[in-house]
Image 1 (tube, rainbow, N blue to C red):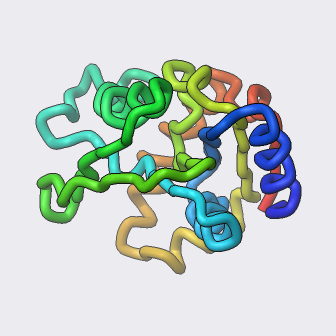
Image 2: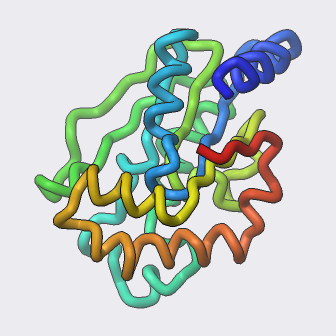
Length: 185
């Protein structure tokens, strides 16, 4: 999997000075792990969609009922994708849910490749910004096993809230079908 992704990225880099790659997929499918391994092998930047959780004042009933609306897509586009697409330096402010506040700004160093990992990264609003789209899937029983191991306290929220929201997003926008590379982890 790693070699196929790196090979696809290297091919794109023969035609472009820099690229941005989206890694979307089901929770607990390995998006963060995959991104960390690729970053270690290539030195690329990694941006986590988790840094763009909605702030409390954004979590309205209307917003949360919107397919793919449970991420701060306005801020992600303004702080990451637009500057990147113009060749500008990218600086963004990760939102820390635990503190309910922004962490210190992150300034991305120059890199020929930047990965954006996380559910909702291939939202149709963002799709055309990316040079490569990757989708990771995981069997439902394995997904639940990984989620329980990761955080048993939040397992019921994953089952009753977050997984259904993701599945609605994947289905409504045909996310897996629109990605050029797909892997079952």
